[in-house]
Image (cartoon, rainbow over all chains, first blue to last red; front, side):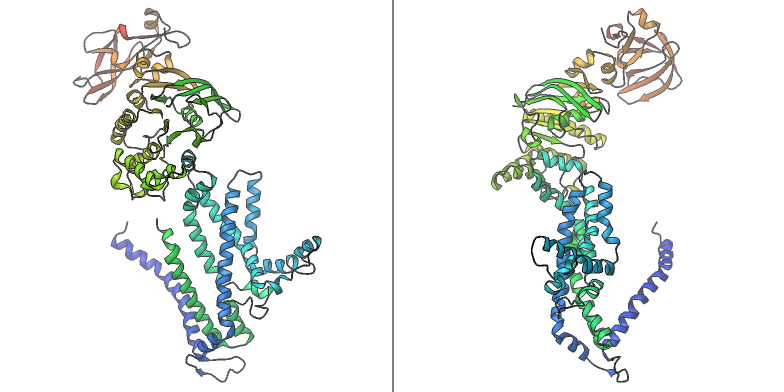
Length: 290
Length: 332
C-alpha cells in the first residue's frame, strides 16, 4: 500500500485540511500573543502602543490570579474524582442484568445532552435555590435551615453541577470497558479464589485503566475551560471564590475592557493547559500504549 | 485425593434441559476425557463440576464431600480454560502466583512454589514477561502453571488445545500426559477431538445430548462400542454403516465396519466400486469407494498402495471385526 506514489498522493490530498487547521490555530494564537504585548483598553482605545511585559506582570500580580489557578485546578480535580469514582460504580451497576436496563441507560446518558447554561440554570433555580429549590424544601422537611449553596460553598456547588454533566460521559466510556472484560478471566479468578473485592482490584480495575486514562485526558481538556456554569450561577463570586482562569480572562476582557491584559491571561491559560497536558501524558499516558 | 462422584446431576438453562441426569464415578488419579460432538453438554458438565454453573438438581461429591453448593474456590479444583484466561496486565510470575496470593500464603513460600512450577513447565526464562509477549504454547503452559501451583485435588481442562496449531497440539498432548504421570492427580479433560481422547485418557466418557453414552477405557470403547453413535464417533476415519441386504445376510439390522478392517484388492472381493477420492498420507492411504450395492464406503490401506482416482477396486470386510446393530442402534 505505502508506495512512494500513494504516499505523495495522500500528502497532497491531506494538505488542504492541514493548512486550514493550521491557519485556524495560528491566526488567533498570534493575535493573542500580539495583543498581550499591547496597551489596548476599549475604554481608552486611542492610547495604544507596545507595552512590554506589563500586561503579564499586571495579570500575575492581580490578587485574584493565584486564587483563579487554585480554583481551576480544584474544579478539574474535583470533577474528575467524582466522575471517575461515580462512573466506575455506575458502570458496574449498569453492567448487571437489572430490570429495564435499556431505559436506565438512556436516563443516565441524558444529562450529557443538556447544554451547560441550561443545566446550570436548572440547578441554580430549581435545585439549589435557598428559597424555592428542592434541596431547600428537603432540608426544611427535616427541620434543617436551608443552605444558600452559591454563597456558602460556591466552588463545590459548581463542581457538583459540572460533575453531574460529565458523569454520563465517564459512565458510558467505563461501561464499554467493563463490557469488554473477558468472561473466562473472571471465571479463572473465581477458581483462583479471588473474592469480589480482589477481583475488582486485580482484574477489573487494571482492565479499565486505559478507559480511565481516556476519561481523564478528555475531561481535563474541557474542564480547564469551564465558563458557562460560572457565568450563570455565581459570576465568579462571592469575591473570587469561584473564579477560574477562563472566567478571569472574560472578566478582564468584557467587564474591564482590557484587551491587552485579557490576551496576556489567555496566553498564561494556554501555558498552564500545556503544563497540565505534559504532566498528564507523562503520568497516565503510558496506559494508552498497547 | 481427587475422587469425584456425580449423582443424578441435572442442568437446565431456562426451559432447555442440557443435561437430563448423569451419574459418574471418577477415581482418584484418573485421567478422564469427556468427548462428544459440539453442544453435547460436555463443557457444561465440566463447569458444573468446577462450580461455575449452578446445579438444577443432583449432587456432586469431591472426596466424599458434598460440594454441590460450594463456591468454585472451595472445591480444591483448578481449571485451564480454552482461551487460557490469563490476566493480561500481570507478568507470568504474577499470573502463576495469583491463586497463592488469594489464598494468603506468604511471599517466600509463593516464590518457591512459582519457581518450582516454572521449572516443571520450562517457563523460568519468561517469568517477567506479560502474556501478550508469549506464543500460544507458552500461554498454555502459563495457564497450566497457574493450575498446578495450588496443588488442587483435581484439574479440569476445557478444550485447552483447540487454539493451537496442529504440530503444537501434538506436543502439548504429550506434555499434558507427562504432567499427569508426574503429578498423579485426577484430571478431567473436555475435547471434541476423538484423537485427543484416545491418546490421553485412562477412561473416556462419550456424551451425546447431555447423556453418557459409554464410559470406559479407550480401547474398550473402540473395540466394544455400545451403540451406533459411539461406534461412529470414536475412530478416524469414521466407521462405515451398511444397512442393506448384506447386513441381513450377516444377521443384523445394520452392520458397521471400520475402514482399517477391510481388504482392498484390484482383482476380486466382496464389493466392487470406483475410487472417488484417494488420500495418500504417506503412512496410510484412505480411499473413498463408490460401490454399486452399498453406497460410498471409506477404507484404509497401507501407504504404498498404488491406487488412484477412478480406479476400480474390490473391498472385502474382515468378518471377525464387524459390528452388528439392532433396530434401536444398540450393538449386540
